Amino acid sequence: MEQRRLIIPVFFSKAFYKKKNRESYAVFKKILGYYPRNLDLYELALRHKSASARGQDGVLLNNERLEFLGDAVLNVLVTDLLFKHFESQGEGFLTNTRSKIVQRETLNNIALELGLDKLVLKAEHTLSPRKSIFGNTLEALIGAIYLDKGYRRCKRFLEKRIIQRFIDIERIANQEINFKSKIIEWSQHEKIKLNFEHTELPERIESPLHFEARLFLNGIFVACGKGYTKKQAQQKASQEALAILESRQDLYADIMATAT
Image (cartoon, rainbow, N blue to C red; front, side, top):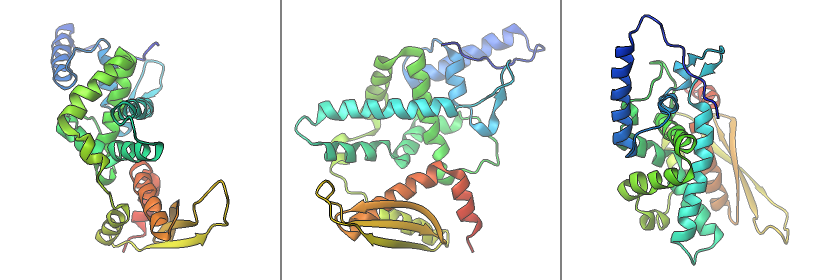
C-alpha cells in the first residue's frame, strides 16, 4: 500500500532530517519494542486532525484513517485474546469483557502510561472531552503497526506492551461498571440536565428484552439502550451515551453550548 509523504520544506538540510529520524526511531522503539519500517506511518498516527498537514497531492493528512483501522484491528485482537483466555465462557461474557477493555477511558489511561500525550501533535484549542484524543491516538498507532508489520506484530504489541503491563484481564472480567453513575456524575459536574424516557417493548419470542431507555442531555437525544429491566436499559443507554460523547465532538459541543 502506497503511503502519502508529507511535504518537506527544502531549506532544511539532509543532516537535520537524519538526526530527526534517529530521534523518532528511538522514541518509537521505546514504545513499541522494535524499530519501525515505515516511520511516516507512525508519525502520521500522532497527528491529530486539528494539526493536519498537506500531502504532495494536496490531501490533508491526519490520523483519522489510521484510528478507524486501529479501532477495528484492536477489537479483533482483544476478541482473539479473550476467546482463547476464557475457553468456557459464552458470547455475552466475552462481549462485556471486551467492551470494558476497549472502552475509551481504558484506552486513554493506557495512552497516558505509554507517554502518547507528550508526543501527539494537535492544535492548542482542540476540543477534547475527557482527553479522548489520546485513546484515539493509541488506536491510530495500532493501525500503523498493522500496516507496517502485520497482524502478528500487532498481537505481540497488545500482549507484551499493553495487556501484561497495564491490564488485569481477570479483574476486568469480573468488574461491574456503573455507566449510569458515571454519566450522572459528569452531567452534574457540567450542570447539564439528564433524563431518561422509557418504552415497554412488545413481547417477542426472538427477543426477551422488555424495555427501551432513551437518554437526553439538556433535551438533546444522545443514545438509547434495551434491557430486561428499566435499570438494565438505562445502563445500556448510559454506556452508549458515554461512547458517543467521546467520539462525537460536534454533539458534545452542542450539548455544552446549552449548559448554564
